[in-house]
Length: 390
Ligand code: FAD
Ligand code: DHB
Image: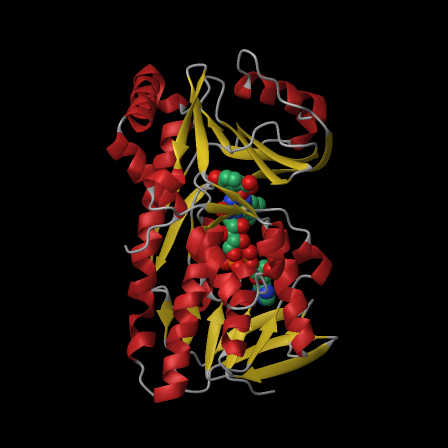
């Protein structure tokens, strides 16, 4: 088989790239090693930056997002027993965030792709990429028991952090930057109306907690835990008990409901540079990971593919490689801004035993500063909704 762009991975990055390319008449084949059902029900992110929601709408992939996405104008920071609102839209030139689950983004994009009849293959195995430095890179894989070779003009490595594309780049070429955190998040999805109109990021001496949502009937909640936390030790009652303690305030209670999903997410900061090797372009989690505090992972992934689709469009239209040559540096500027913001939010809000009481006092001072200084609040707000220019 031959195509223009071979896309490895049908996460948000791969599916959005395929759609953006289709809109400008560029062919692609998407290869995904999981099933459709699996990728459509993998509960992950839920916050879209203003410009990223607009990207999906402008590309014709945002009909349901526009109908069902919930626009939020602010978030709340809770510490020392009080909540403080950060008015995102007032501080960031009217920009807002949209609450819309990653599962829904994926479902919308899969449906659009299948409607076009263009190739999106699920449950492929033994995927490998080759001839990256030639003008005819190839993807090898197995599908329905048959070994296949896909010849491409370029390959987009959208196969997430554990994919095969990044490890195919010679180690002599790739520089890696990373930081591990000695905590994770235990997250639940619960069938109960959100107890607050806006997201609450809570600093607590027992550890961080986050109140979020997916819809008027679905709450999404997280508590800081150990990175290798055993879910067996966390029956639903214990999760609710801990959430009540960490999010609790005088005169306010957290409504509880049936737990529909429960999982532990480890945390890491990671960047691979450059995001290109020959005719292979990495996008999304394949190239970088942020800790989830600040909700940047999904947004960065979609920004990468927006830049890549523009660059490929220009190349096919004019023959100029200038934008493709600029791809890695262009993406990495925003990636590093998000790396800093996510690390900063994480450090300000999580209990870190190694930093002791000194660290705790610094966190509380920073939280007071961010919620009382217009300049500091503006900095948080413009990063949270997504900077226009980096
Ligand atoms: P992915 O979504 O990882 O998609 C990659 C795809 O490639 C997957 O479908 C995978 O099955 C496929 N694939 C992998 N290897 C191969 C292969 N060899 N061949 C073919 N296909 C392959 N971000 C937030 O902002 N907020 C959150 O709350 C949040 N929670 C998260 C929880 C978890 C458990 C994880 C892992 C991430 C979370 N993130 C969160 C990050 C966010 O979900 C990611 O940044 C986002 O999914 C990135 O999209 P992507 O398309 O780059 O990668
Ligand atoms: C959600 C996840 C985040 O990482 C975050 O900062 C805010 C909300 C969520 O899953 O809803």
